[in-house]
Length: 315
Image 1 (tube, rainbow, N blue to C red):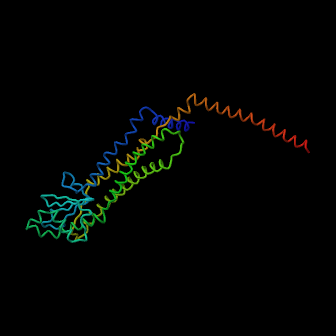
Image 2: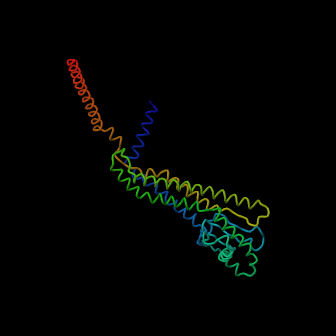
């Protein structure tokens, strides 16, 4: 009895929450998780794309030379789509992914000149150009082969799911007008499944991107520090990793609370079932069916009995 009472109380509390007067204030709470999610994903993807404040500090890995010469203070910072060149005095950032081919020597020379213009104009530092070109080439290879577009794919799927929420709101309005238990049409099922599928797939892919970036950047940094004779040292970007994980955290909270926002509010089933009119209607319907069944049975028995007696008289 105690278990049944507890389950009933939990059920009634859930129904009262969804059908209570304060539900309209809670149903929009998931929207508060979308703004930080979009902000952190945008910052993560825009790392090293420009020389604006804080943007050059958002990098996946930073490449430096292991030598103690002129190039020791120079650094190549690598983002998902951008790359920054820091010579100690100036910092230049630009979009590199897809614009330069690592297998084309002319692209490496051109990109190095754009990232380190002060070095190219300084005759005393031109001896460091081959090492800078080696770091730029390594950065392009990492951008193309290692740090792919996984985070962008997850963000795009999540955005598609958010866009599909608008037609799903129209589906909700149609469902609210239908009776409980009414099946969805194929169009309504497509919109509903597309919305949930895109958002959940985006969350899973972003989670995979966070794990992949953290593990890969950490492995590269550990390997270059401990391998003897390594010409390039790599340092993982902690700030960008924190932003990625925060974006995933807010995204996951939104997914958990999204059913509250997309809940279809119909007539309260407890009120409908426990109301006096509902009880009277069910009791009257049961009594009516029972009476009709009792009335029909004697007639059927009498009819079949009379037909049987007529057959015996004919014999």
